[in-house]
Length: 329
Image (cartoon, rainbow, N blue to C red; front, side, top):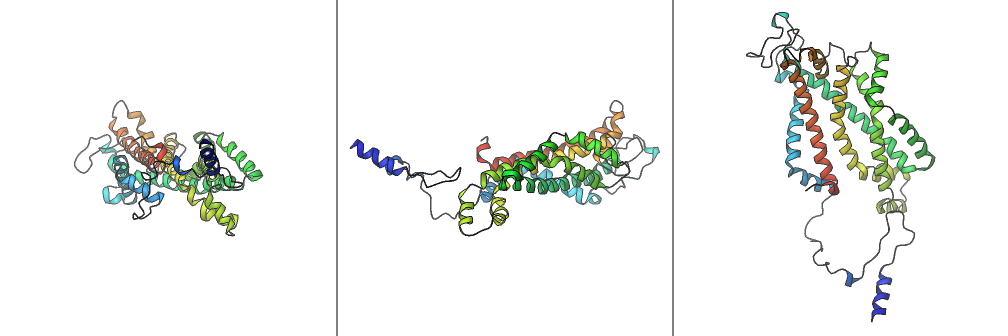
């Protein structure tokens, strides 16, 4: 009896022939699955995708709701600053220098007599635009490099990985400082966006490469190849869409980082010129007033901190929703 049972078990654990890494499977015998009825699937319930399950989780997460509301408010302020502030941020009068808040000017005036509230509202457009555009370019560039390296492997992976290592060894802020010193005469926002993209795509490339390495050995890619699909079609039609979860998480959390990077460069005086209203520039101008009039420094700093915190919290919530293993509750 025991010999027959052991023989049945050994026959049941039959691996599929020549599986790819990660595709090893075996069929368990019936007597080893006592929870079959408990784990059974209700066939009357319509199937849901990973994205639908993630959205269902996000809707119930207070952290995501709060961060999403803050992010939407910041984006609306950046898109329609004139709706929230009627005062021209560049209209300054020395007679109002460091005057406290009053009707129509709740945050008071800075050293040059400019309305602090208006500059905070209009500064959102510059900082958020740079953060969003940099995130998009970093995601596209780093995603393509990482996907190509992970999918084709071999010498392609070796070459792209070494290039990635070279850029990874250069700190983003330090590299941006050196490069921007060469283009100090330019006043375009794109010089900041392209500079941050040049030194910021490496993390996205490494994340994408890891996700593609995991996805390319799964069964759907093998089945697609067996049906006659070309490698490039598999890459862009199947593998990249199934590798987007960590990429989206990385992009969401990186957006706040690029906003801070722009503010840091403007604070150091090598980012945007003084004629462009930005939070980093206002913080740099107000740093000498920290002991005498800290409110001038507080408001742009608070706007920057709230914006970055909103996107970071959103990234944490999205990470928990798309990766069940990282959930804390």
